[in-house]
Every structure is written in structure tokens, then in C-alpha cells.
Length: 248
Ligand code: CAA
Image (tube, protein in one colour):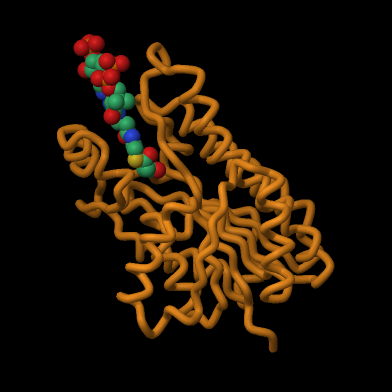
């Protein structure tokens, strides 16, 4: 059987790096797509992860650029064969209360966190349909499920991500393609560590498991959904939040 090829957007970010590693460990050829300056992070990663380095390649990509995503998908298909797995992980925060939020903070966030999911998925979905197999995994957030003070932009985009997953899951359900959302809670990443310590500590005190999640906690779940064997799971929103938010 052909080795599965996976694109991970935001592939050199806090969660993205762990997701690349878990997919590589699962036997995938992984394409880590991230902003050009992340090339430096990739070089450091390569040295660290010697055994895995051959299975993970880095390519620069700005997911907010639809034309670039289309070209990227074509280039990667030519280089590696068609794309089997897409993990949409690229995301940013632009936290501010709505009363202080600038239009640019809304726009920039939507371009990456929501348009990015559309741009990249649109670019690969046709070949997934042609080959009768695909796994699309979209990273949302607990804050898309609960709303968070200071995050009207982020919460709206992340809630939108799961709406996107559910709609697309229905469209491609008979084509061998599953589309799912993973909603991490607060994890030990640069994004979360940028939240003021006092606020972060208060949040941690509300997590039943009593600690921040690790990128591996999330990556394990993404790899599970990416597996060939996960073909009967689609349109779900899988929370990985230490019990921070529980619902039916
Ligand atoms: N709930 C209720 N009231 C709050 C509050 C909260 N969580 N946080 C602040 N306030 C109150 C303050 O006490 C203050 O009240 P007064 O005006 O009466 O004094 C007021 O709101 C402050 O309002 P400001 O607009 O001045 O807020 P600020 O500029 O000081 O801070 C903020 C705004 C930077 C967004 C800050 O609230 C914050 O950092 N919030 C946390 C945001 C957060 O959790 N981000 C997560 C990033 S990581 C991530 O997103 C990953 C993931 O998926 C989990």
C-alpha cells in the first residue's frame, strides 16, 4: 500500500510540530507547511529529531493566500504523489475585548484561522475524491465551544471551523473521506504562554485535570483520526481539554 502523505499547516508551531512527529511515527510522509521564517525552527527540529527527519519536510506557505495554497497543493502532489491527509493547524490569536478590537485584528485572524482552512482544504479535496480516500482534521479550540473573554474573533473563527467540518463531512462522506475537528484546551505552547500569568493561572485552576495539556496530548488524537482505521468517524468535534469544558 502507498505510504500516506500528510500536509500539516502551522507545521512548525506549538501543536503542529508534535502533530508532524506523531504522523511520521505512524508511517506517513509529512509535509510541514508554515511561514517562511519557520525554516529556522525546522533546522533545529531536524537536528533534534534525527530518526524522524527523513519523513518530515518543510515548505514555506501562508495559508491566508488562496492562490499560494492551490499552487502548493499541486506542487506537493507532483513531488510526493497525491495528498491523503490534511491537518489544518495554522492559527493565530489577536486578543482584545470587542470594545478595543481593531478591524485589522478581526481581519488578520479570520484570514488565517478560517480562510486558511477553506483555502487549503479546497486545494486538496478534489484529488482526495478522485482517489477515494482522505482525512481532513481541523484544529479548533475549547474557546470556540465556550467563548472566551477577549476572544470574539478567535472564538467566532474556531466555532466556524467546526461548522465547516460538519458541512464538508456530509458532502464527502460517501467518497472515503472523513472530516473531523479536534478542540484542544489550554496547552503548553507559546500561544498560551503569551497570556498574562495571572489570567493563565486562573484558567489552570479551572481545569479538572489540574495542568495545561501537552502538544503530544493533542497530536495523539490527530494521528488517531488520520489513521486508515478511523474511517467510520466523521463530523465529530473531539475535545482534548483536561475536562475544562464538558458537554453531552
Ligand atoms: N472575565 C470577566 N471580566 C474580565 C476578565 C474575564 N475573564 N478578564 C478581564 N476582565 C475584566 C477586568 O477585570 C477589567 O474590569 P474593569 O474594567 O471593571 O476594571 C476589564 O475586564 C478589562 O477589560 P479590558 O478591555 O481593559 O481588558 P484588558 O485589555 O485588560 O485585557 C485581554 C483583555 C488581553 C483579552 C485579557 O482579558 C486576556 O488576556 N484574556 C484571556 C484571553 C485568552 O484566554 N486567550 C487565550 C489565548 S491561547 C488560545 O487561544 C489557545 C486556545 O485555543 C485555548
